[in-house]
Image (cartoon, rainbow, N blue to C red; front, side, top):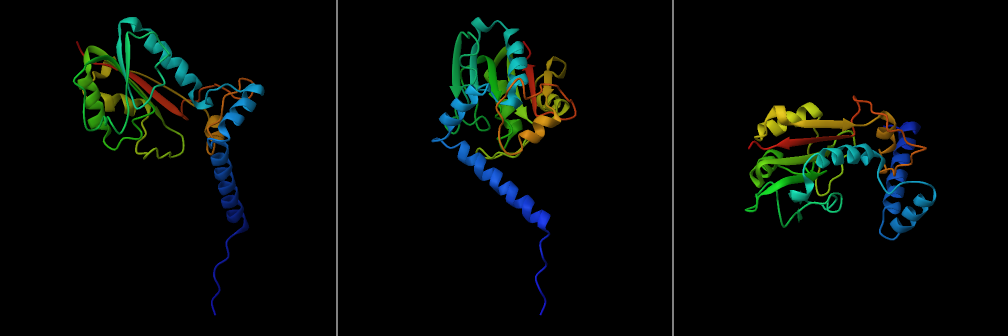
Length: 227
């Protein structure tokens, strides 16, 4: 009688380790544990900021501060990260599913539209970016940030990744002049490995901010609608 093929021990061990890490990460991020974990992390010197976002947050803030922020009407799509980052004239958040950027634009026009880690989740990114273009006043700007070398995270789904070159040409296809699109990216192999299972909080003594351009974890761009 034939016997079932045996599974190599290293495969079993690898699967068990992945399962344990996934369950442990889910436990630590649960609503009951999160406040305790964050309090302990602060005592140990960790910042309340994900390692993968530190450079992106710094560089995108620099880009936005080059604009006359106090005179800008701003809309952020599916998020409120930028609500208190700059002294905007006005700030509006447009949350999914009440507002679906792939399905609709807005009658109101804005000087700056922000999509912070959103477009990897949308099913129809070209429709979405063209709707952003329509939401902007002439001369208005679109700030978009995206992940690249991170695990799939379906909130509610996960669809796309772009490099800097790919992002520039994606935005150009949606109407933004190619020569007016500014891009950036950041990542390194240590951060890639460390974030396979858990979104690591940044500790300046433990985590390098060195940029290895062949291993981007985040990519961002600012595009301008023509006058």
